[in-house]
Length: 304
Image (cartoon, rainbow, N blue to C red; front, side):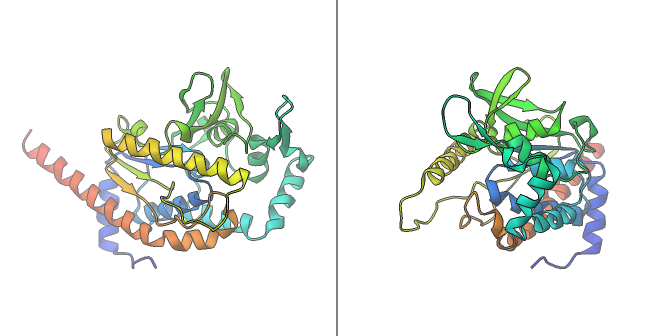
């Protein structure tokens, strides 16, 4: 349960946050990314408005909603409505996009069919989301992987949905996206929690890692899709582990959500509940970081 709001602290934090540049990085992790929403609620409760957001995979999706002006509570309500009933997804696919079954696309090379990430996002994302990055109220950096150049590709302008689809395009599940003359796949392969992108743009950088950790054996061999997704998560953790050896964000939060799988979207309420303790941790960390920044600013002004 969230601890009661301290009105005096919220006022102090809000005053500090008005001057400090606060950057927020939201990492990839599939359904575990619902934990991001609780962290957004924490920022809203503290009166902190990020000056820039960077997101990978599910982090780019939730980051886009927040950057569009939706509150954490509004995003939570939207997600709860969407995943409350399994039939709601199919209903929206058919009602919003002509020919809902066309979210399936063959890769054109005789291989297995995969989902069209762009069509899924068009059907499921809030209709209030702007068409382009330029329509967002907060700058957003979406991280994808250039398949052929084998490097990170950052998208921060142009059409929004193709960029989010590219950032989330896990091979074998969602088909790659052609954008800006590149073939793009899931950004987690190169930058699972893109806090480093915010270092030049923010005074305080907070990162939310939802890749989870060691998984418990379920007593059976993983399926093909579980093997693909699980291997991706191992890659994410390995990349992040090495990245943190070089530099770390001012705030790093890792919700205890390891018991959930990447595709556990219908366990949304359980994920929200599991992330609550991390929400309190995040609020305390933000208060501490902002107080430290404010103290350093006062010291620098007194001793120019």
